[in-house]
Image (cartoon, rainbow, N blue to C red; front, side, top):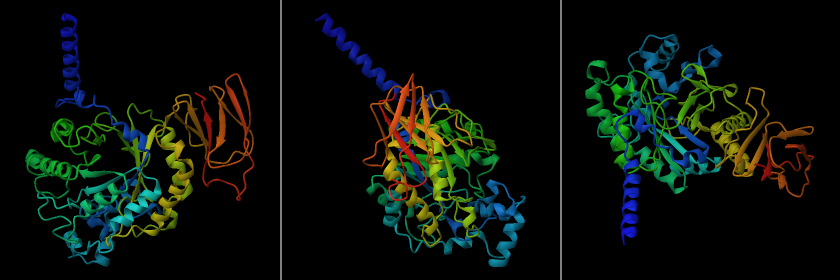
Length: 465
């Protein structure tokens, strides 16, 4: 009897300890101890969507104008037109010529109508692309929300423009395709009257926190993706206060994933997964960085996140380049969040549709080497010249060649595989030699008639680890 009581006490203590471990305090040490939910690392590929009032002017200078990457963002139209900066003259000239000096930014909202928006068509495209999650701009730095936020001062897509809950409609369509749905949310608002140092506390209490909690409680995001964190430290923004609520009390407390943009000091230091942007962490090159947590690269198909009518074909990455970018990020242990910029009338530009469809075709053949995989720790360091990448899943190793090998090549530090195959290629024998932990592979003959895919080819080494 004493043993039974002791056992029950231990079980009770174990349950209590397990429960206690799920409570997160209002400090970074506690918040950072929460693991990133595993589904995020398994997903690997997501679609970013920048869509808002800035989709009406849809303009920014491009690389042809010799401007930096951050200067090519069309979603920054309002600020770059209104405030002194190195590119202001581009925006002033464009605006005055096409809209007139008396046309205010707020007037664009009446032209943001989304009359051709078909959320089911968008969701079908995302499914075909192979994306496992979507992140929509619920509110960018301009403050305009794509859902009927009570705290948006009537500056939202239901009271103006489309007169429609764009966020809600897309969320329903995406989830019907069994794709995770997340929301980008800008902590800053350029021209909100309370967004200034003297009243930042009031801004947080009366606007930011209520709006963020409304977004979470109403739409239950799988990802809460913040941005615009660079003006204030996380202590001022009270980020850990919100995150402790999100992790302890919110309806998505056990499943939600967050990023690292919670204060001017937090990128690659605090939060959930770490983020890079066009291979940068702010101004620093992220290519050689070894991340301590799950991470994600976000980038556009061209130079801008928001739709930019000024971009031409040469500004866009090719389908091959995008597949190679996906491979590079996944082989290094990361995800790719690839952005599209819809038009103001609700269309995804055809060139973006084509790029996503091509990625999906490649993934249909090679998905086993991407989804649910992890970085292989024995892989050679990735450089700008790398043509052979590695991912692993359990005891299987995937060798991803971004150029089809024209001669024998070797893989070292592995066990003798029980089977070797080229994904998508049927009825073909692959010749190999294994000796002292080194496998030499003789690639099979590939022609346009029997090649399983374009852009990159994957050898699966079964039970090689």
